[in-house]
Amino acid sequence: MVKLAYEANAWGGVVGTPGAVTDIGSGFYETPGDVVETLGAIASAGYTGVELFDGNLLPFEHSVDEFARAVEAAGLEVAGVYSGGHLIYPDAHEDELARFDRSIRLAAAAGARHYVLGGGAVRSSGRRDADFEVAGAFLDRVAERAEAAGLVVSYHPHLGSLAQSPEQIDALFAATSVGMCADVAHIAAGGGDPVDVINRYAARLKYVHLKDVDLSSSAFLPLGEGDLDLGSIIDAVVLARYDDWITVELDGYPGDPASAAERSLRFLTGHQPG
Image (cartoon, rainbow, N blue to C red; front, side):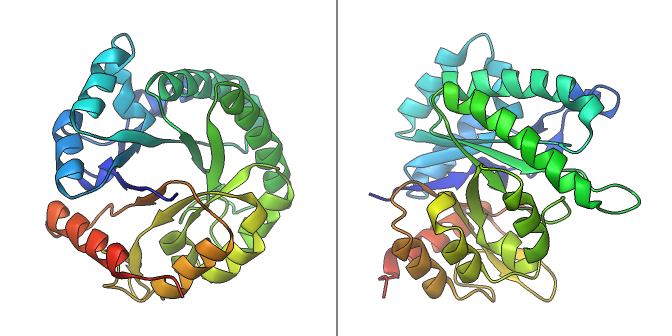
């Protein structure tokens, strides 16, 4: 049965740990702010799960029980942990694996179900065909480690990354066996049709991120307030026999995050799959 989670990055946005400028192994996504307060805000909006960046678990690395108690006290579960990497540079893979191993340990210790991999650098000179092969093989290595820790692993196509357009998504997924995290707004803003992508990768659909988008500006919006045909998208998810967490996400939104989360939940609870 599908359960609904919310991404913690709505309360603070997205930054990275500064050491990563010179040290790949220290690079983590994180959201500024008080994670415990965010858990309460997500629960108050009506969701039962949370997804967060691996960097937001670093302060709890030696006290993960403290984080687990805060999640339980809020009445939530950890639906997922999001990580990312450069992926395309073989010489950096040893350091990237050290970082991913740390991230995977944190996610598993926090009780996460899903482990989401995003990114893949784009060279200053542009993408090369070989980049998809290198990244795909490396994603398989990371996924094997995460699955061994009990996590459900998927790759998240993302604007500004190696796999943005439909053709790039296909090229990467042809080079890897990792599952798909379908972020419908990123897919659409990258020029794709979310329904087509979900249908094409139904057998590999491991996780779903929902947000709406203004396609003229690529600005993300609460569900039902943008250009996406979310009814058809949700129907495609149902037809794919997906029955796991759906995480609603809204990073970079200038409005009130609590109100936006509540409006998205009202949209979802009012939609009946056709």
